[in-house]
Image (cartoon, rainbow, N blue to C red; front, top):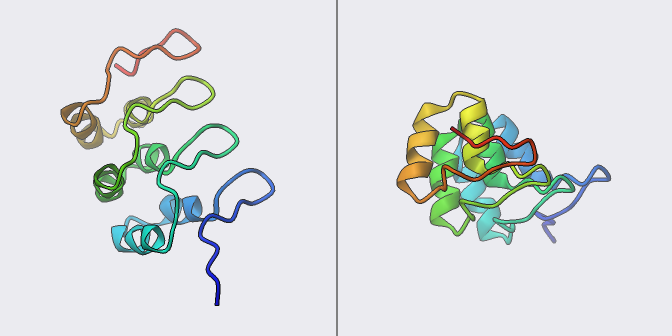
Length: 116
């Protein structure tokens, strides 16, 4: 049986992103990566799994994704970074984590805003 962990839906979302939206359990993400899920895959908006984990406040997923090669300073089509997503959603634990792991705090998005 073939498992298509990188299957994209019509709207450009990769299926395993939906798991990140609805589940804090990093064991599920661990298994998806084990079966070939691309950590830095971007949807049609340029968003990655790390960006979604930062948005939803899932610190365990953030930690696991970064330890498995997720790009911490990547930008979506609007110039927002994982740090931007964490700040916009008041996820202070993730903000601290990202800064401690090298997130750039002065990146400017298309609106001229920085994460902080």
